[in-house]
Image (cartoon, rainbow, N blue to C red; front, side):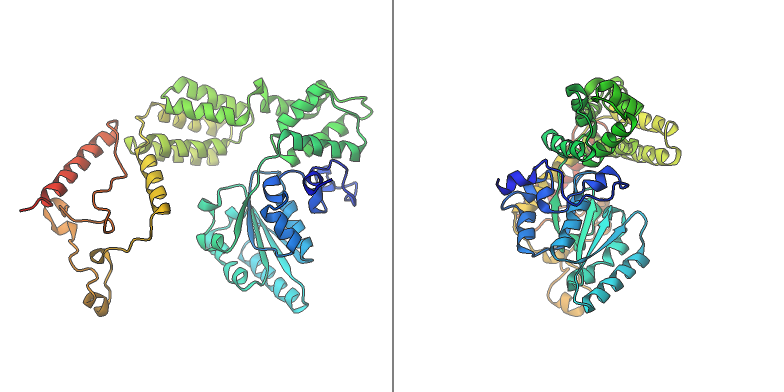
Length: 442
């Protein structure tokens, strides 16, 4: 058996936790080869596999949805280097807890022992709390591991990201969930599930190992003495939660895709329908609120800047009222977004400029755009020739250049002829005409 096969070995792991512990904890892998899933990180020659095998563990951010093994991998990291394992929850911890973790790591270092500090939901720490880790990660006092379900690029400080590798974890595939279910069945010595019940349970788990194990444990406990677990038994165990989650058999990402496309297609009726389907299916309304904010940015943009504010207001209203009252604010925002004029001009421009900057060299800032707070910098010509727009006719320095040398005339943003961008486009055309006139040879 090769190492890839061992990753998905369905045999129950040795050394299970005490029977009183939840099933998910009792089945937590004790070795790397017991881990199910994440072959892109743990397969032969892959980044984390190499780190584990070499014993050279680095600070890292584990980014992925719930129930895919972030905490498990962090614990295994600590085991590889025989380190003290300190767990902080960013939901509950503060600077005081971080300080205590640092003091504990210093004490362990004096004893010749390493420390791994694991921060769950690290995106919930504010900038100051994240900054508190930096000097200690830099000095190697401890290995830092953060777990997050949110995009680290947006939620974590760039300084912290530069000191930690980001590893992306994926939801477990149905075949991987089946292997996990086989381990659970063997550990509990439970009867088989019918094919229909197994398929429905795997769909309910939606790639989340913890969700699968909690549901299966509930199924076993509520059906003692059953010869087999069928679809009816599964419904008795999970009840309304199961019905709402997979009502109609629609998949989560298909539903959010339909909602987004309905908004983009300016169909308020379809928008409200898919919104209701998602909320009835048990989707977290906060997730829907975040997606509405994204739609306002991506598909409406400057054609109607009020759309973004309305989406943010709806998210805030839901936080204050909760369900079901707060859902009306989401419905109002979704309807407004569907009816608003559409523009992805800024979205396209932003993607284009990011791609350009990524492949382009680091162009120097032109001298006339540089700040010159000292005499020396002024003597070197910094700031010379800069035209203060407020002092110019119409508040516009016609003919002035603000891009780096060699990029004059480069355009990224082209407004559409809809909504407010219609007027923005007219103004931009006027400014560009003034620039062209000012640059004509005299």
